[in-house]
Structures are given as C-alpha cells and as structure tokens.
Length: 282
Image (cartoon, rainbow, N blue to C red; front, side, top):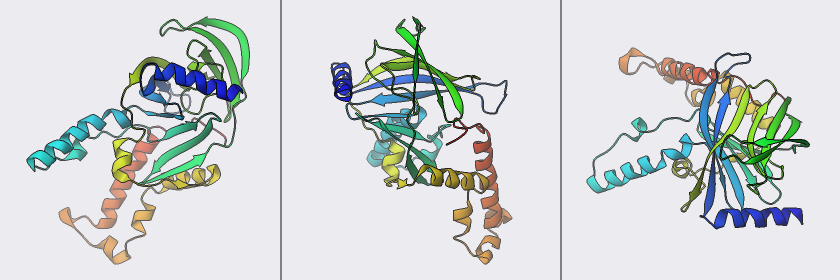
C-alpha cells in the first residue's frame, strides 16, 4: 500500500508540469583520501513515473549540440569531426532505480562495453528528530543517518517533494534527499536545481549511437572486471593482435604496441585522477 501511494505521489508531482522531472545535484568529492583538494561536478537525477536515472550531467547536456551537427552534416554533405565536440564526463556510470520497489542497478562503461549489475543491499536509515531549512528553495528538511558500503552517511530529506529518492544509490526516505554526505566529507551531494522536462529520452546520445545491450553480471564480477581494467585498460585490445602485428612500425615510427601503451597510460591517468571509491566495501 505504501509503495502504491509513493508512486501516486510521484505521478501527481511530476506530471502536473511535464513528462519528467530533473533534479540537479552538485557533487563534491575528494579525488584522493585525505586530499585537501575538492572537485565538483554537476550531476542529475531524472525522475519519471516508472524509474529514476542518476548520472553526470555532461553525459546528456552535449546531446543537442551533437545532434544539430549531425543534421548539418546530412544537409551539407560536409563531414564534421564530432570527436572534437565531445567532452568525456568525469563519471561514465549511471544508476537506475525502478519504481515502486526501487530495485537499483549500476551501469558503467568499461572500455567500449556497458556493464551492469543489480545492487544487492538495501539502505537502512535511522530518521532523527533534527530538522532545519535547506539552503536551496528553503525547504523544510529532516536528518537521517545510515551505514552503507563501509561509510557512515548523513542525509537531509524534504517531504515538500514527495519522491522517496535521491542521488547515486540513495533512496528510501519519506521525501526527496536534498543533501547527503559521508562522515569525513569525502563525498557530498547537494540539491542545486529543478527542471521540468517536456520531451525526455532516458538514453544519452552516446548510448543510442553505441546501441549495445549492457552485459549483466553480479556485483562481485563487476568489481573484478573493473579492477582488471584499471590495471591493464587495453588488455582485451592487445590480445586481438599477434606479436608480429604489435611490433610492426606505423606512422611516426611507433609500433602498434607502443601506441597502445601510450593510450593505456592516458587511460590510467584519467582513472587515477579519481582514485577514491565511494564504496569501500561491497
């Protein structure tokens, strides 16, 4: 009964204004443990009547620019280097929660393949009596805490927005999560904006162009695959070539093996720039 009421409230809240609701969260994080440096990225939680999707805003904000240039190419016949228009998001993953059970799945891009797994754990919140007012839109908020993934989290939620959801894998409070952070403030999400979406496509342009069905695994297998990817990002690519092909020199005098090694170092630097994991334990 509570689940059905939750969905009714979501539908009433969203569909009085548009096809979907987009909640913007400023994600602040320390790239390394005990780092004095704090990075910030704009992320989004898109909510429809069936599900929610959380991801880096950059993964969808570029879609209109790319699509307009594709139309220009079709009309003019002049090729445009789309690679120069595309910026890679800091975070390629997305989190989906299917209503009303809030079954949660995590999908990430490992090299050129989307890998997905169902989150096996449920968050057990302890709601406190502590209340306040949010800095964004002055919502009435209430505090809750939970221990999850090896960290202790503090969340502030508002019943002014009757959606039991939040950024990343967080959900399950009597209203939208306005702010959530771990006890050491390594990771923090803060609600920063709300937008009605009249036209909504849950797939980013990158996903539509790849047109690949994600490979489904369990969380343990994903963790293993991602660890192997971080150690040797282009291992699968390298295995497709013979020793002779890898040692063959190409343009600029570099062998294919050397070029792959250079690319691998670039990928490792990108991964290493955000070396601290949100989840310490599975």
